[in-house]
Amino acid sequence: PRRGRRFHAQGLAAAARRADLIITVSQAAAEEIVSHSAIRPDRVRVVPNAVAAPVVNPAARRSVLEAAGLASRPYVLWVGSLEPRKGVGTLVAAMARLRRQGRHPEVQTVLAGFDGWLGDGLIDPADRAALGDSLHRLGRIGDGDLWCLYAGAAVFAFPSRHEGFGLPVVEAMAQGVPVVASDIPALREVGQPAAVLVRPDDPPAWADALAGLLDDDRLRARLGDAGRVRARSFSTERWAERTWAVYQEIGS
Image (tube, rainbow, N blue to C red; front, top):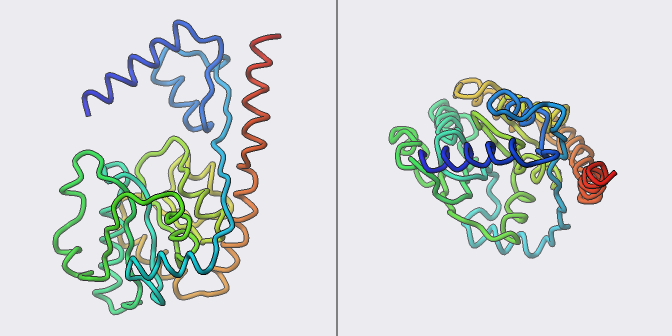
């Protein structure tokens, strides 16, 4: 929205004038900052975001899933703000395509997140109707319940058109959940080699990728294990060390 664009433009301009160094969360974001502002590349430092994932209690997970109507039912999870760049319509269209083809009719589609901007027209009414009561919009979720939703998911899907980092991808991987994400710079940087990457805005490709994981228990387990390993590289300890190093650089 206009107000958000103005806020970011003013913030970047202020940083360009005043900051000794700029911390950003990915190389993809760093390249965009340099391309779209007066900030020089020699002033930018990349410090990836961090995740401190809890060990989810199985009883707590069961309780959360029962309350959401998801007990004993496999589901594909999406987490984010409901706004155009998040691509949620692509996921719903892909799941509706599988439903129309009779593939994995038991799998639920779960959207967990708050309303963003221009959220009303994100999902095609025909796709919504095709999924019926298998589409669950849970709204904003507290941290404890969110970790339980991650831990219980069969697959995590993140079909964004643009991200600066993609924190939900790391959160899902930290719980050993296989991830399908958009093939965009930030998510390639964060998710590889532990995520399946698919072109954004391509529901048939997303349907095939999701079905491929849902069809293959071994592949899901292998990606889940790879995701746990990948998520460990985004520890809070490493984040703190790298952030502190930037401050030391300024002070030296």
